[in-house]
Each structure stands twice: as C-alpha cells, then as structure tokens.
Image: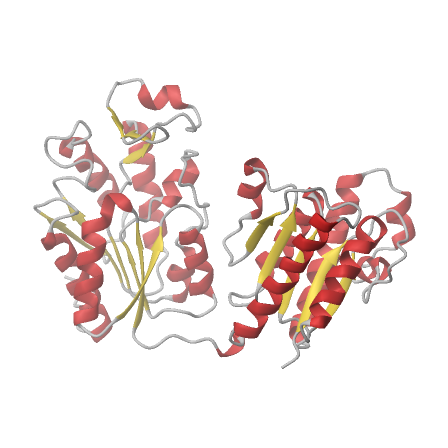
Length: 412
C-alpha cells in the first residue's frame, strides 16, 4: 500500500538531493511530500509545501523572515511552522513516515518535529553533522533513527547518491513494516519496568515474578533517554502499571549526572493514576567518571568505585541526597493512583552491597527519614532487610504491585 513520507529540507540549498530522494521513494511505490523550509532563497525544486505556507501556519510573513538577520528567530519560527504543518498532515492521515535531510539546522528542526509525532511513526534524520555533541540534543525520547552521512550533502556524486538511496530504502522499509500507530496496543495487564546494569538481578527477578503472575513486562533502560521515552508512552496511554526500580533520572537531572532525564521524569504515570511501585536504585549514587559535570565535588571524599575507563561511581553528597529525598516525596505526593516505595536497608544496587566502598546504610537511612518526613501519611512505604539485588526485594515489589492491581491493598 502506498504510504506518505514527509521530507523536511531546504530546497534552496539541497534541492538536487531532496529531488533524488523523492524519486527513489517514488520508485519504491510511496509518495514523498517535500516540506521546504528554505529560509533565504528559492530553489529550483518546488516543494509540495512551500516556506510561505509553513511560515503562514504560525501567522508570519515569509518576506519578513527573509529580510531578518536574526537567524535564531527565523529558525524558531520555521520550526514552529514545520511542527504545525506536520501535525496537520498527521491528522489528515498524510504522514506515515518522515525524513529530515540536511545539516545541523535541519537535523535540529527535524528532531523537534519528530518529538511531537507519536511512537510508531517511522522517523529518520540523515545528516553529515551527527557529532556526539549534537546527537545528544537531537535524541529526544522518541523512536528516531540518525544516519551519519560521512560526506557533505553537496553535489550529486556517487557517494551522495548511494547514501540517499539507502535513506530511501530505509524509510520505505520502515513504513512498509510499521503498524498504524493509532492501532498499536499492548496486552493487558502490561507493566513497564525501569532498570540498568546495577539492578540486573532485581530486574530479572521482578520480570520473572511478574510474568509468573500473568503480567506482560516491558523493560526500559534508565539511561536518561529510554526512561523518558517510557514516560511518553505512558502519557500516550500505554501500560497498566509501572515498576520504577531505577527512578534516578530525576535526581540525575537535578544535579547534572550522566543519566539525567528531565525534571518532568515520573510525571506521566503520576498524572494518569496507574498503579506504581518504586525502588531506590541509584538514588544514592552518581557517576564520577571523566564526563561528569563538576566532577571534583563528587570525588572529593575518595569513595569512588572504578567501573571501566569511562565510568566511575560515587555517592551523592549528603546535602544532595536529602534534597533528592524531598524531590521524590514531592513527586509521590502528586500521585493520582496507588503508589508505594519499597526500600532495601542493605544497599540500593549491586555496587553498594555490604563490603563495597560505597556501602553506607547509615546515610541511606537519612534519605529514608527525609523521604518519610515529607510524604503524605497515606502513601505506602516498606523496608526490607536485604540488598536491592536480593530476592526478597523483588518479591516485595511484585507482591505490592499485584495487590494494587487486584484492588486488595489496604494502605496499611
């Protein structure tokens, strides 16, 4: 079946390449809709959606934009217009896939558009500007693909043609295989679970126990991107419940850690009111490797566990630990549905067990006391006399969620 694939680019500077891509997509049996966001000139290739239409969708005149010397302002206006245009195409069922082709500016605009599109709509950014410092900004929590084009997108030499043909093949294959995002659904009851390497045993036990009880389990890596993507899926209506083994993206965002999510982390499930059980994996620990912001502060007391050449872990300073406790209490207090925190008393990960340089149950208790002091009295809280990775922690998490789901939890 023919699908509509939106191409985002600047026909004034990349007209030949966009036309070639459009033709290759047509060769595969699909229709390419060229959204031309040229900001300063007229290309020889005519877009299906002109820059004037894009600017006009947000009440701006293209002549005003063309005359402006404020490139950031112009880019922001065209980005807003492109988002509006893409959402209109989506609502009209004229967008089943999207490609942004060009340099850093087009990649950035494309990422903003793609961030607004639902999970399941195929998305590709094809750019020679996929440097690590940029990609981190583009990788919003959505299911996009970034293709690093090793050559400049200029001219139509054999290398450029080969790369563009692959982009056409990739997006065509994706739209051919993709299910209609409006019909995507999960079997019930479905549970989203956050995890990472330092909670591996806990996650495996939780997943096994949940499946034994008839739940369908969907794990997400709490790396600051996958867990934010999970939040977006929850907001879209996916999942019946959540197990937050690793809700640490929030405190990492607050103190600029390497696994930072954002300060809206956790809000989607709280707002929807679906049952949740949280554990505190890595709420007491943070990265201290060479990429750590303000690293000197975190290695000052010498308690650093080297993981590999890039990764080291240390404990949050007490002031940040306590501020984190208040942040998590504030989040839990907003829950519109049943929620519980299960806290092991002998370490919150595989790397702060008894005997580890990071083991500090007394300081962990300070977090617990601060959290409980700020929680509403009706929010459930349970401690277990073991490490996070020990089986009783997983059992407490799963039993608590099961009680929530069965409607038997009394709140005691």
